[in-house]
Image (cartoon, rainbow, N blue to C red):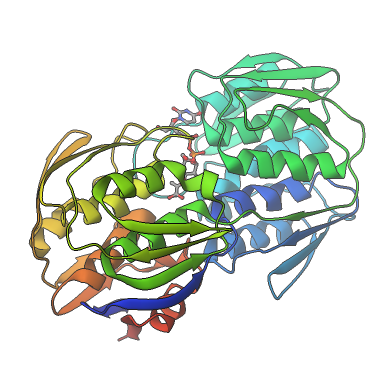
Length: 417
Ligand code: EPU
């Protein structure tokens, strides 16, 4: 059994460099198979979600070279195969092969995706989008079969600005006949990154990053190169850590506009932040003001930063309210924070947090990826030793988390027993 063991209370000084974005690279890799030549991705994080997708590329007969954060994907010999359940369920983003295979071969067989257990997470918007483009969809148990004689551009309105559905429909529509319009599209920075890669391959996509995306179908997609954007959730997680423990802690390689909602909330709490170029210098303040936080789609406060942020709110002097609006079940970490000494009361998707409370190290569980990040933050500020179980969730999304934190003075290690 692997545990992350943290001895809390250390001030953190030095620099943490942000890696490429998980939620971008997990869509860029499936997008690459749309090319008939080679695709180069720069700044690729070495996380287990990336590896899980490479297993699918391997199954489809793609050739991959991955060294020093540069990934070269040669898609000249890609073949259409059934994506089996054991590969599909390793992560959420396996569902991007639905759009990509349907687009390339007009046929795809793939099992329902996995991912964090943070709500029911249906994929009905994806399916409805594919159907609008002309695909026939059959569901056999957990397996989805997509078939189309041809894909034809369509007007697709999303009931909710879903990140996954926006990207998947872009992938499916990029080679369709005619023009596709996605209305109420998600505006997250990752969508812009995927559209840029597709455009570099020869696609004609405009409006990515706004709520109306227009995709003019093209016949062929060729060689292309793209830089994976910095991970705004990793950046936000370390910025929150800096707000709690920073003594001239520098977070570098960030894009300020991507984490503006978080920075604004931290300033409201009284955190000392100096933003320059692509970095933030953070010093822990003497006290934190309580605030209200509500998660929203981009550019609102990111749901993926809600759980880490809730740990910071336990240290504010007074009552804070935290509300999660995207997922039904993103409260797995609260029980463990309360065990450690926090005073948090959950009512459906809202948490009332009374602070400031001292946290004491305990044995806890990373119930999902961002709950795991919240446990790491709690462990770093707690008195004594925190032991985190089920750390594979954390390693799915944070590249070199132990090294990055150790380098700035944290006492954190993986113990195997
Ligand atoms: N939804 C539906 N039907 C659909 C699609 C989504 O009802 O067909 C609902 C979901 O159940 C959820 C909401 O819409 O309640 C938002 O889902 P969205 O599709 O936007 O999320 P996603 O594509 O499944 C990605 C990230 C998540 C991140 C969200 C929101 C990946 C692989 N995952 O998920 O990342 O929380 O966007 O920004 O890109 C994480 O990194 O910890 C993580 C969960």
